[in-house]
Image (tube, rainbow, N blue to C red; front, side):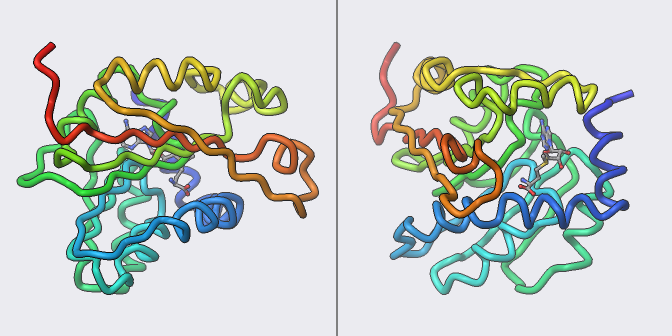
Length: 213
Ligand SMILES: C[S@@+](CC[C@H](N)C(=O)[O-])C[C@H]1O[C@@H](n2cnc3c(N)ncnc32)[C@H](O)[C@@H]1O
């Protein structure tokens, strides 16, 4: 039994999917609204939950296709139900075994990658799914530097990979990415960690020319 899938199947039906949308919405929008999507592009959301980011991105005039994948079937059912645009597509699969014809200009993931069986394997797959020059935006609130979140794994009763910002950068570098990071804080939040640390975004760019190593 996959405990991650079971947990998020439950969250999809008990209202916590919408709560995540609310909890993550401000920082994610703050981050995504600064990206200039100024030419036609394709987009993949890994661990899309109820699909709110896919719906947001799909409404951009330049978006040719926005795909959301999730290993929770119930999350994908919610996303399908809430579909708004014809360029949205939702698939029930984990990223590790996603089979997709074509590659993406942008891949996004919020609070999902650290649930993967192996972050290294998931990152390798994401790297493959990107076009040369394509970018992966990975948001996480759960990282060592943000001490308040360290107890989440115990609360969730799930295996969650906890890494520092330095370790995340190393993981991305080892997968072949050129890497940058950005913290998005919410200075008006009632939560101290949101004001002081916020969401860590690791931004990986797939080089235009792959190295021969
Ligand atoms: C904390 S939720 C975040 C959902 C959404 N990104 C959001 O911000 O509302 C994590 C989601 O990632 C999904 N997930 C975890 N590991 C995954 C994997 N390896 N492949 C695809 N989805 C995964 C879970 O089923 C869950 O719906």
